[in-house]
Length: 132
Image 1: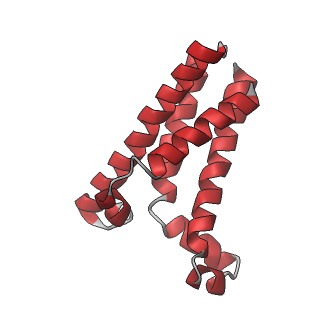
Image 2 (image 1 turned 90 degrees about the vertical axis):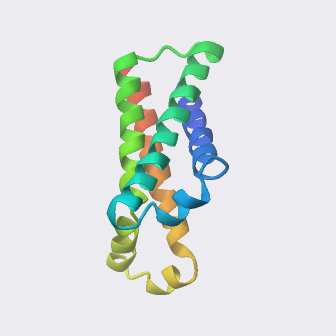
Image 3 (image 1 turned 30 degrees about the vertical axis):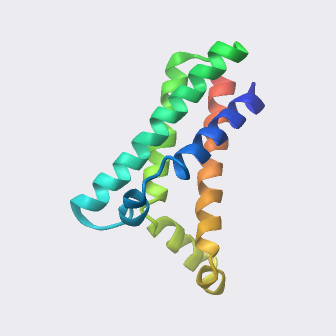
């Protein structure tokens, strides 16, 4: 069940991060103040809704037997971790800690960002599969 869950979560992530993310969200989700937080929360909410739809599809089409409480916890985890990662400071701090200044200057932050998101998805898929 882990593989099916991970694929569903990853597709939901890609849909939410690329075709469903508005230009405003992309430009402001890491910004200070109410505008930044609104953009960030709207983007994270997109992840929550699309992930919930993907899991519902997996249950309906694939017959996945997931514990509803665990599934909700996994969806909340994905929304929360996505919101924190997209504030951008965690990625910047990691890259500074890992001494990746040159990598950061050449587009590396986007790769570290996506790796952080995928790690959160793996944790969610493992938890939902293991606790269902």
